[in-house]
Each structure stands twice: as structure tokens, then as C-alpha cells.
Image (cartoon, rainbow, N blue to C red; front, side, top):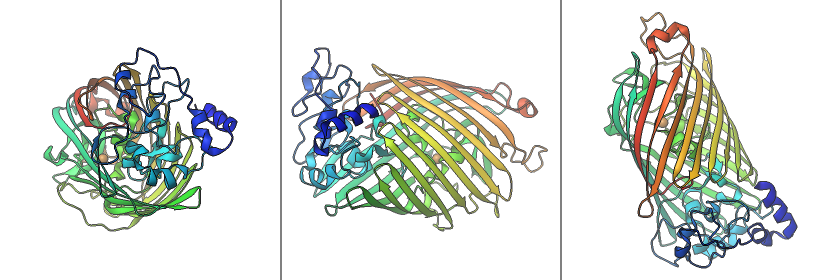
Length: 507
Ligand SMILES: [Cu+2]
């Protein structure tokens, strides 16, 4: 897709025409179920496989507009791209001037912007082949942008996005457990252009997971954080009420770059891939990854300040933040300390690919291990087409002083069309926290464990912008012989219903 875009862009010559060249209008076929809803001005809504055709509409000049993806861009010729309509008018033709889409169109022709992309990523971000995942982490634009319910008022564009996810899980073996629980997240984003070159986004993300037991939910082989002063093992901790309270300021500098400032009392530093709940590849995986505390556990950090530099193909960032993980009081804000730092480089060569490499020094991340710092190095590659989203990630947790603990994660979601989704995740991690009891002979010993999960979800569109997904998954674990008796067969299955306001991937 990238190649064809590039060729088309080159063939078309000057940048302003690249967009049109890259998206010639296909013939509208009769079979499109949404064709009847399609309204001008999109000339190419009705690609046979375009499930979003029906959601495009003539941009209203003012007032609330719920769940619409508005973009007059046409779809691509031979690509069943359900997200073509999400792209902002400045994206994603690689030959196009980075700012062509927002410096003029976006501010003047506000209604023509893709509000999905704008609301979440900011109009200034998603035009460069990547969309914001969480914090300032990037994901491939081709995988889709976050959508939700929109409103506009007084020069501000508002978007609400979220989910409530009911899961029933049964996990076997001596350490297994059963539970039904609700994971939830609600996001509010307010976007505003302060000037032609300066864009502000205010972000709030909340969760009602503190209503869950302090011990969270069963999650065989997962470790991290505490409940009642005891480390959580084979559980996933609930997330805090405040998952993010942050602001992002983007200042265009020249034609091809911009400065990014991000931060707040709760945020995500420039470390690791986008957090799992924001990754399209993890959209229907009902359990948190067992490598959460290797890759993305810093997604809720109390006190974050990030400065970054973004060009069309690179984003370089540095953060100072609080190294300590959130404490087990989930309803309050923890004290910011700004005692840790991270750097991250992200490469965004095409709308289909984002790769990041990051390194951090965390000051005493774990309450249970005072005096123990951590160096964390992560690398990840995210590949996406409108139907397939995949993540491959590696991390090295280097305790200072202490062990070096590597982790791998591979995860993918395939939206096969018609609402059918197949998904999978495989993880392998060297974990030294599986036996937290100091009297246990296995305490502090490192074991390399693995888990593989496979699942299916059926996605229904309810009244826009509400969606429902029903599905299930099963996993198997693999542990070294020394702890086989501890885990027994270590199998698990889950059934779920996930209600979302807006979405993050294909229908
Ligand atoms: Cu988390």
C-alpha cells in the first residue's frame, strides 16, 4: 500500500495533487450495505469492501456530531481499506507536505477534518502516517484511529471514547481462580487550535476498576503491584480511577516538523509501546498481558513531563517522570516525584508501520523492593493494515542491583469482515516475582514462563457510536519443570462482552 501510494504520489507530481492521485474513485458497486447512507462529498465511498462508507457524511458546520468520521478523502483503488475515511485530509501521502493538511485546511475548513484522528491524535499528528496510541506512543495510521462521540463548541473539538468490558474467566491448576469482572475506561479529549501553528489537546482518562477487588482479576503468570501489602501474583491489578490527566501541546516548526510537549499529574512517559488497551492488536484480548510490567505498565504514571520532536518519519522524545508504580489506593492521586527518565525513538516510515526503541531508568518502581531501581529497554514493531494489526515487542528489565529479565510479546488481531475477529497473543518472560513469600525456597528465583492465547470475537455496530463485541478466548501456559507442580495444567478460558463508545480498529 505504501509503495502504491508513493508511486501514485510521485506520478502525480506536485504535492497538492498527490492526495487525489493516490485515491482515484472506484466504481460504486451495488452490494455496499451502506451505500444508501452515503452522502456527498465523498466521491468514492462505495468501495465494495469499505465498511465505513455509510458513516461518512457531509460535515456539519457546527454543533455536535456523533460518531461520524468525516473526511472528504476518497478510498484507495485496490485496497479494501476501511479506514481511508479516517484519515485526515492531510494524510497520508508520503510526498505531501506534512502541514498542508492542517495549517490551512484544518483551521479554515475545520469540518473537513477527520474528527476521529483529530480528537485523539490531534490534527497535527495523524497526518504523518501514524496515530497516537496512548500518551505520546504512536501506532500505524492504517490500523485505524480512535473514534468516539464528538461535539464541538467555541473552537474546541471534544471527543469521548471508552469501554466497559464484562469478562468471565476460569483458570485451572493450583494457582488458578475463577472470576467475573468488569474492566472499564472512559476518555475525554478536548482539542483546540491556539494558532495556525499551535495545537492544544487536554486529555482525561478514568477507570472504574477500583470497584474491582483490590486483588484485581485472575491472570495466570502475571505479576506486579500489590494488594493489602502483598505482591500480586497470577493476578492483574485493577487500574486507578485516574488513568490520565494530561495536556499535549504541539507547535509546528517549519514545514516538516513540530515540537511536542506533553505532561500532567497522571500520564504516560515516552517508554515502551502504546499501552495494551489502546493497541488494535489487543482490542479483544480480554486479559492483560503477563508482560505488562515489562512493556507498558508505566501507562499510568503519577507525574510525567515529555518533550518531543516529530518529523514525517521520526519522533524523538524524552520524559522525566515518577518511577514508583501506582500504589494500591486506586481512588486517589499519588505524589509526583519526577525521579526517573526515559528516551524513545519512533520510526514511522509508512501508514502501515511504527517501530519504537526506548530506554528508561526507573527509580524504585516497586514498593516491595525499596532501594532497587530498574533499567528498562524496549523495542517494538507495530504493523497494520485496515484488517490486520500486529505487534511484536521485546523488553529487558534490568534490576539495579539484580537480575536481567527479558520478555517477548507477539499479538495480532484479524478483522476478517462481517464483524468476525480472530486474535492471538504469545508471551515469554523471565520472571523472578512468582514466589513472593520470603520463606519459599523458590523466592526471588527467576523462571522463564510462557503463555499463548487464542480467541474469537463478533463485533456488532449498535446505534452509532456504540459497538458491542461478544467473544471468548483460551490460553495455555508453559512453565519450567521446577514449578510444574505449582501451576498444574495452567489452562484458562474467558468469555466476554465488550461495549465500546467509538472504537479503535476495523468494523
Ligand atoms: Cu496497566
